[in-house]
Image (cartoon, rainbow, N blue to C red; front, side, top):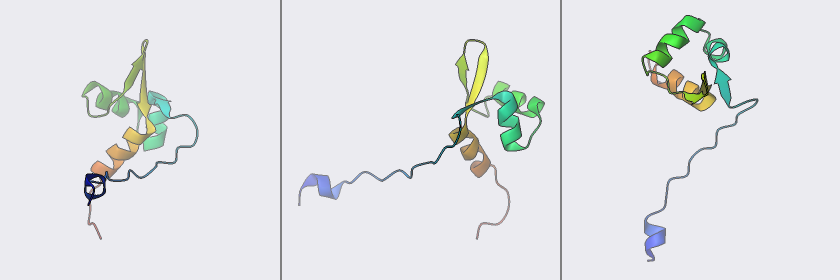
Length: 77
């Protein structure tokens, strides 16, 4: 059996993104349903990854979705 068939790479699930991929802190706060102050604190505390362009901090929607999934509390069915 060829080695390529034995070691297949896992297929990444595509993420459907509508609108701009990078959000300002204000838009990220709206996306999360949180206060702007809370999002700023998460960026400062390095809890939320960001992209810096000039003086602007922009947050990727994919990272916001990961943040939501990793911080869910409750029963998993």
